[in-house]
Amino acid sequence: RDELELYYQPLLDLGTGRVHGVEALLRWRHPERGILLPSEFIPLAEVTGLILPIGPWVLRTACGWARAWQELGHPHLSIAINLSARQFQQPDLVAQVKRALEETGLAPRCLDLEITETNAMQNAEGTIHTLRELKALGVRISIDDFGIGYSSLNYLKRLPIDTLKIDQSFVRDITSDPDDAAIATAVIALAHTLKLRVVAEGVETQEQLAFLAARHCDRMQGYLFSRPLQSQECGEFLSRTGRSA
Image 1 (cartoon, rainbow, N blue to C red):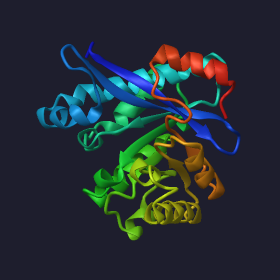
Image 2 (image 1 turned 120 degrees about the vertical axis):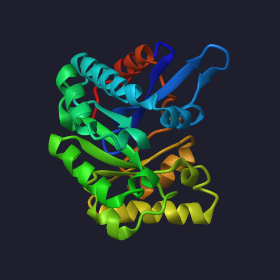
Image 3 (image 1 turned 180 degrees about the vertical axis):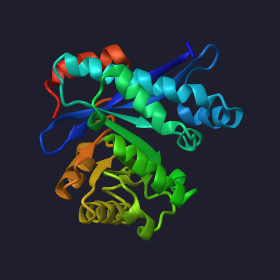
């Protein structure tokens, strides 16, 4: 666990032009291979069961930093945390989340839990039950990587969620690929019709920003605003950019 580290990528609120929150992103500082992304080690960690102690550690650490930044002048800052498929299936997940909130003092409304569309649909009825229990705590729920899974609109409208995150694969060529542009436009319209917020991932250019802003995308994250930052760097970034939205 000493080799694991959380990085934090800011999310910009287009309505206020300020940082709304940050997303916690897990990294492994491998002694031989350098920094590894989750896609390079989470699947193995899930198969071996090593993911089980990692999940609660991520919750406590990320919530702790969010609370610390709030106390340093960013009282409305939120923290987004990804739940792996194995972690989401754990019977004590709700207890893990509740414990992390109690230990760190973070208000539930400032925690945004993310589950991928694919994981959400593996057991749709079970997902609905678990999400309802999490929502009862007062936390917010996002469907991550939306658009690359296979969720039906019937299940989507039943999920107790707050936000859809457009996968970056649709954002990358959004200004040059008519299909990607149409999909992103449709997702934003669908989400707003269902009274959900929309976050676009992987925004890297002013042209992408302009396209999404014109379609009233609510929030964005990507290298145009900031790369993922270590905790100290993130604190400095928040201090430079002013109070959170």
